[in-house]
Image (tube, rainbow, N blue to C red; front, top):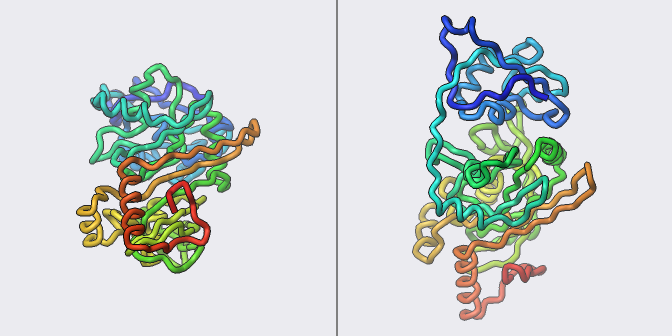
Length: 347
């Protein structure tokens, strides 16, 4: 339940001379938002407000919960009252989304029912707008479906990563899926091509990642680091490259990319943590993007017991490059690979 309509548009603090004529906005938290971080709640309800402004309002105590100052990491509890100071709105600048982008996203829908929608996100499209992207996947979906009452991202994928992206179509399902994520009950599986011949078998990598900077820390001291666990399973070893299946449940920013680099096997084509000279050589061989793909997503809803298992096929670009590696290995009589081959990727 929410008191007053959520504020929309680009928002700035109201001048002092006008504050007396404007009211604060209050939100009373229901059970579907319980456990959500206050900053994420505000991002969802104060559409068009710069994140920097929201963080500044939190930092200076202008946004309060039950009359008290809170940190941006505070998690909401049912019946909390969130108070936002007087704000005035200015018309929001709506991004122009090209028709070809709309068509691409529409064609990428893998599954949909009354509560969830899953797309096979293309690489190169961000999930949220930013300084390098005027719009993200969620803005495209809302443009495609202007009458949809509710569309919210459940989780994120890097801009350079393709594959399964989960969207909730109502508040109750969003809250349930966020709870499943917190309790690590959503299984996420990726396919990655990494540098070098992987010889470590099935390996669990558990290296905490630092908040914001995402730099690894083996000790995870002072609460500045968050647990991150990745399970690496080799599928096929090629000449100087290895095809891996990677399973995660913690989902930290750039988790797989950092863990792979820490293991000495950066993801092929990774523009941030990868081997740049190696990436240039791969580009000449036909790999123009990072080879990291969210191939599978599975979970069971607590409310109705329905089990979801959605797979996203590789893009033609990744599939063609993988086929070229198989062909090269066949021509040279190399049969190296996992002891448990995966026929889905030709291993």
